Length: 314
Image 1 (cartoon, one colour):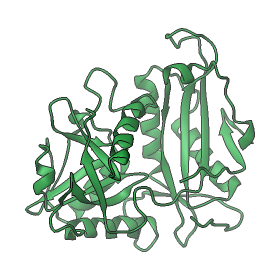
Image 2: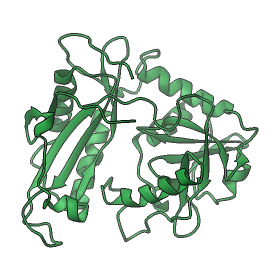
Image 3: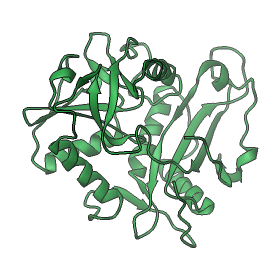
């Protein structure tokens, strides 16, 4: 989806014009990928715009910054408030919210210590990511391995990690698939280019543990909570590649992907090729909450204070 600009972006405590949110070409982040970021959805339930799991996303952002020794001058509360301010001031929802912490202009060397830490928060319209319908997506096993332990930290949502993701996604696209699934260095299922992976076999829901080079997805965690509430057996354990071929159901989770069924893997249909009952049940519960059709029983939604309702079409 092409990026649609909005009016304001939050930068280090102030709202500035979208067109003024610029960095120098010699900024550390451009040369060395020194950034951490989040992707967060703001939904449009009947009660008004609401950001999904705002506190949890910002906590993961700050955790990522800590891993990379980036000192952030703003608290979690400051950044959550800033997100609400940006969405409210721009009056654009439903939307995608993008906070990013980066190393700016200061030193040309690899060491980032002399480079200032900059914080930006933008929001913009965003619709469905992997598919525009509900039939599921066709994916492949990527030839690219997910980042190995003790190389780049998978628990950090860092810009540099997504160079690996780009290779996975581009390879899948050029070969006629919607998305690729990467294996870890031991040959177990890790994740998609930007999504966690779930499989269902004999009524048991399974996803890879964080030790398989997996980002601790907020939507992943949400689905695990929903599954346990629904009484669906859940395990977090290594998934052999071939399990994807014999699974009864499979789906992606992520901020962009939400809960997206996987229809086939390497041209092998998942189950009978249709969306399975457990996937459907989890989709129903997830979307029911974020769309305001069901009570927000987990307190996942943070209301955005707005002067008037001006939702955008996506």
